[in-house]
Length: 124
Image (tube, rainbow, N blue to C red):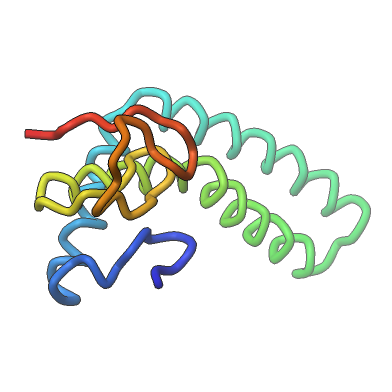
């Protein structure tokens, strides 16, 4: 089964195709103004947190906390967009999976995903 970040990586033929799909997803994300707005908000908040921690804990530990928080927030905020992009790319390749949840729809008899209830739309 796939990892939690990349839905069904085994559905991509090989590592090269997986890397290309992730790069394409990231490029698409970077083109969205919401990405930059949220990033600036996160950085501003972390800057304030760093100043507060430097006053409270004037050690390298404060910077480590800020960097770890930044990585976690970036992953949380944009994981959904990356996963959706990867699922769309898999659908474009002919894999029948749910765009909303990643459920394998091969053999699904209804017009809705049996896992999440989203409508099954044909791509391409």
